[in-house]
Length: 357
Ligand code: SF4
Image (cartoon, rainbow, N blue to C red; front, side, top):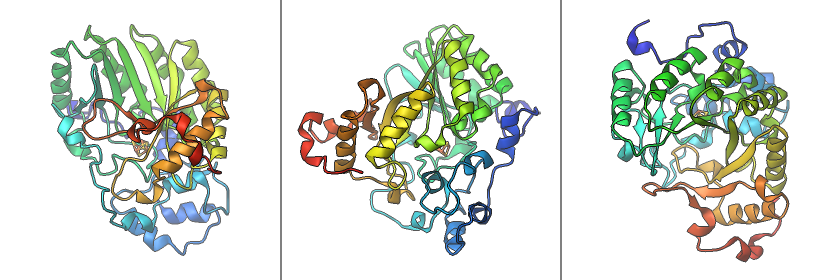
């Protein structure tokens, strides 16, 4: 393996279960539909939509879908659809203008004291609403030279206290490669916190290996794993066991979800998600309004409905299970609470609370 390939995953180097599952994902929409006993009438459109953002679905994740139900909330998140081909005003390739916040390839610096480090373009699952579905990963992947440049930039910025590993999905890196990366980051004394954003343990529960737990827990940093689950049906006993081990090792585990039409835009779905997350040891952190990425407009939930849903959820769950409802705006120095964006407090929203579910 060349140095340039040193941090680029994709080829399993061990026989760990999660690597085998990641290497055998479903990539053919026809196979996914047939496996669920669903009509293939819309297959041509799905194939067209998947042409530039291919379908990727771990088999264990597909097994959690309801056979015969084209509206299954997990299926809707991953099945390419002809709706993606519609051009909708305001929906664009780079909805968060990330290109304007890239001081060196691989680093995204938007917020005070924190940076995102893009460590891979690979994901175990392709989510159709992904705001980075058009991201120019080829310009950001961590070749050895780019990683050197990114770490040199970080070394010179002692105002940066937190590094967030992002992607793609950073946990698609093997534990060995993550270990190499974390060792280099640990050598920068001003870094105090490590955060990992990942959907992989949600779609492949066995990803939370003992080796990963040791890597995240056995460190001088405060470590935070922020999962990405959108529906209670996604959560598994394997995830719960992995989270418990992480917590025992001192790692905080949070969740961020995206509010998605036809997936989790009801009070019942949001309440079930918050309660299920807690039962799996995870605290809800953010509920994001959809980023306006080209191809995902059919997932958008109107702000008024989102605010009403959030207010209704507040009345159903304890405060520690209420995620912050936010929208990310290009150029802003932090995420924006949706209520603030609309100059309304949650207390004035009762007129919007008519049966969100
Ligand atoms: S796992 Fe995350 S980065 Fe990968 S496609 Fe889904 S939302 Fe995008």
